[in-house]
Length: 235
Image (tube, rainbow, N blue to C red; front, side, top):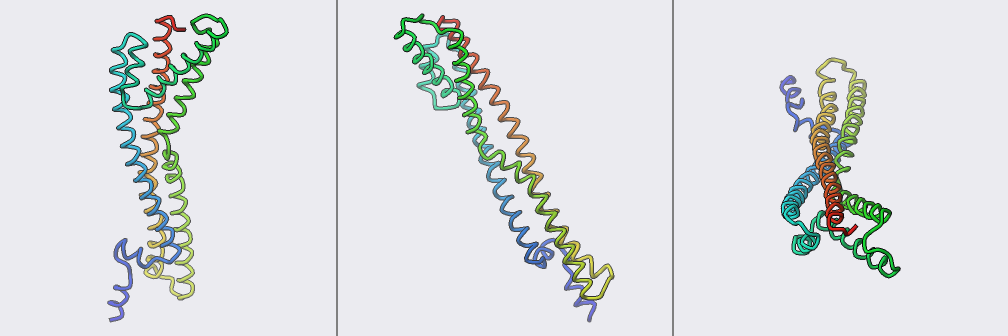
């Protein structure tokens, strides 16, 4: 009869271990659960955002490469849906218009000087960085989850092991059956922490790579805009 009661008291699966966990371990597991939900929400949101952004960029660039005149490109930017590429183009056109007006007021040439072209390049770089920052929002959060989760799990495991050994010391029993449940309960925090951290790390690396690729595409687009202006004698 005593053996049957002892057997039922020993957790037999992961859910039983979580139910039998100490309040501290449950608090760690609750934090890990919140971090997991938040990281998956960020990954889903970023996946949808990148998909929409890349589709818009592909459609715009297909039309941009068909245009041979700057006026046609400006008209394309106005009738296209707002996107990172259209905003970069509109910023370049705005700079060109404002600079030529100021130059004309001072009796200067109609084309931009070398220093003004360099200034245009800096303006486009600033706009590209702004678009990159906007697209990369919350991506560093995934790296944070991937870094913090194992540490939280390790802390829960260490505290759980200490609690288990203190319980064994108080009970005066040193056999494996008395130690194993407490150690298993402690290790469950590390296992769940790894389950939270691994997808977050994968998501961070994937989205960081896509963000870098998109940033390179925007920089190349800015160079194409400058080249188009040069071909028409605007600069």
